[in-house]
Amino acid sequence: MTESFIINNLAGMLVVTSILLILVKRLITSIIVFSLQSAILVTIFFVIAYFMDAHELYSWAITSIVTKVILVPSILYLAFHKIKESNASYKAIPIPIIILLAAIILLVCYFVVAPVKLPLTQTLKPVLAVSLALFFIGLMCIISQRNIVKQIFGYCLMENGSHLTLSLLAFRVPELVEIGVTTDAIFAVIIMSYFAKRIYRDLRTLDANKLNVLKG
Image 1 (cartoon, rainbow, N blue to C red):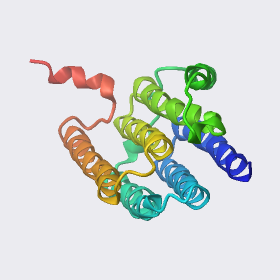
Image 2: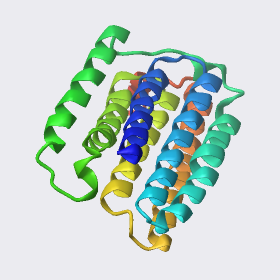
Image 3: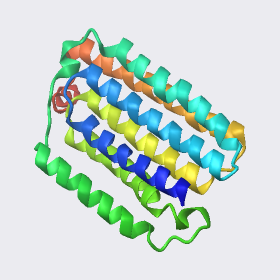
């Protein structure tokens, strides 16, 4: 009861930080919010590991501290802090609609996971619904934001959602697999950041809508 109360409340904070990450404009604020969300995710890993006696999750949590809380935010900061346009807002969807869509996504995900019957998820269905919702909120971020940097954050949200789902459904997988899954995000962010900087260098914009000029 105690662990489910803690984890479900932490999951609620993941939803709040996801919406904030979409809405905030400044790069540095987005980085801080993402680091905070990743720290909450790591805390959930530690709580599950402690209460479920899943020692494999400790290495996953420690790796996530290094990769998600420190490295990914640092990579994004170093890549884009000198580009003023990384703070630009190119929202394709108004803020009230984004909040409404996030609420609908969360509600739909809750009903989707309701029939799931696994030992761990019986008391953690809200957090399982949140993990699924994080993935689709990240997808919504990619669709609703025209700023390429914001779209990278959308990918990071999807990645956090996937990790939370895996930690709930496969928390006893070998440590090496967990570490491999976690570190994949770093290479993905590095590659996306590299191409985003190339786009800015050539076109002087981070507006994804203006990439139409690349057509032959």
